[in-house]
Length: 107
Image (cartoon, rainbow, N blue to C red; front, side, top):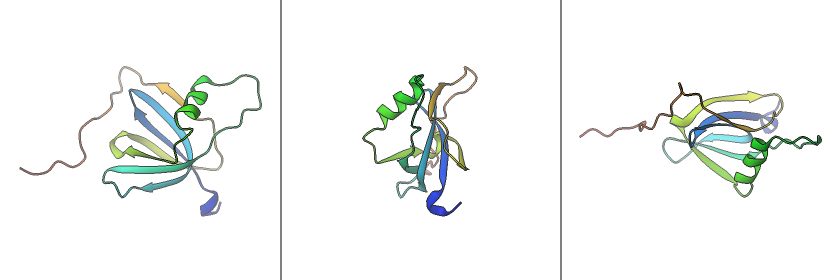
């Protein structure tokens, strides 16, 4: 797989939900503490049954060119052979999002 064909699956927490997206561009952002993602890859459904969470994601990111995800919200990043279906799922009661900063200045 060449560099230009690489597809990444990124899983992160946002608004108490677990997002799973597929992108072709993924870099450390120049904005400290963020991962920058872009060139979203969407599954083209050929079936009559549509996944509502996939459609919700497509609507949410339809006009987004690049998104900046806080590093402390990222659960996992994988380079994959081919895309899957993007989805949103609920977090279990045992999982909580971390809202503490990565960098805490000394006083």
